[in-house]
Amino acid sequence: GLSHAVLKVFVQLYKQGLIYRDKRLVNWDPKLQTAVSDLEVEPKEQKGKMWHLRYPVEGQTAEYITVATTRPETMLGDTAVAVHPDDERYKHMIGKSVSLPIVGRLIPIVADEYSDPEKGSGAVKITPAHDFNDFEVGKRHNLPMINIMDTQGRLNESVPESYRGLTREEARKKILIELEEMDAIAEVEDIKHTVPYSQRSGVIIEPYLTDQWYCDAATLAKPAIEAVEKGETVFVPKSWENTYFEWMRNIQPWCISRQLWWGHQIPAWYDADGNVFVAESEEEAQKEAGAGKKITRDPDVLDTWFSSALWPFSTLGWPDNSAEAQKMLAKYYPGDVLVTAFDIIFFWVARMMMMGIHIMGEVPFKTVYIHALVRDASGQKMSKSKGNVMDPLELIDEYGADALRFTLTAMAAQGR
Image 1 (cartoon, rainbow, N blue to C red):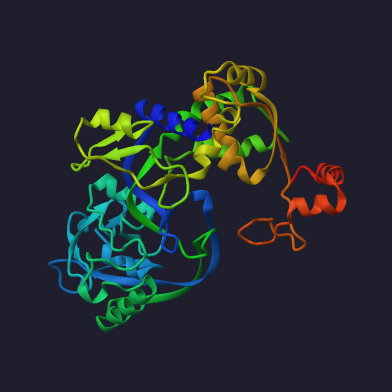
Image 2: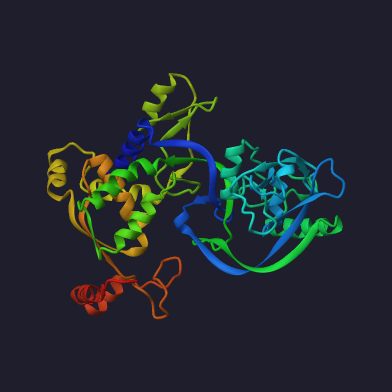
């Protein structure tokens, strides 16, 4: 059934080069110890501090570069300082090195347009393994990527011994004391800034360098964008097409693996040398690996939205070739109308469009009707994780199914 559809699509996309394994930065939840999607990260504005730190220039007496950070604990993973190539203040320093306080590691001063001469000192500390922008700078300059934390958000073996095992918060306090003693703190500012939190666990997200499975969403998005541009699928109200286009035209590789114990397990097996064999069954993977070779299945599971993306055709019997399944598909695919709320245009609608067109060759639905969110008495979105949902079966018992249907239909207003 649905599990077969998931396996078949994963293997097909892998063989087409549209699913691959890569080491990239992900949003990591240290409490749940899993990667989470960008869409499951909740940015919150809060009060914080900006620390301006002095990094001494190697071979120069009393010459420093000042960098600013809201997360001083990440300096243990710095591998460069970046300055803008046209910034006259630093042109003479490009190519030189600074000595990283506490660690003592020499790191280069690189020229990169990511640095903004108008912002702060114009110099930026680069921590490729713990910041998404820094990761891109690191790739451009072939910098080492030093992951300083473990899966629980505690500092690992790559940092000085006295810091190992500390939480992010404990490490920050200890670093600030040491930097103060070294006279390496130039200034401390009180600021308001945006901090990313996990919607599921409520803890602060850590950008984390790890091996994950990815889907080439940019390639899959192109025909899905064209389908809406041509009117093959229409959004009602039409203004929501802008939301769809904004996300699809700027789409990033889709991290589809999760380190959870519940879900569709990824159909990939490894031998002792780390070679990967992707197949619909262990028997097929064993044939690929060769008889007698020990293989172990990848423990990770798929992002729940991967299987949800197949819903328009997997629920109709695909990929079963029976006459009944073929009849169901011919009759009900594509569907006429999808009715959903605006908050899952990215999560669900866009991904159903991508998978439907790629696997079935046509759009999964002709019209997407977007309604407002169902909210509680305080105006909060109803959500299982918030515990503010109402059981529809209880409402049906009290008022009857038709009364509930009528109420929801009458209140399914367009808007937010």
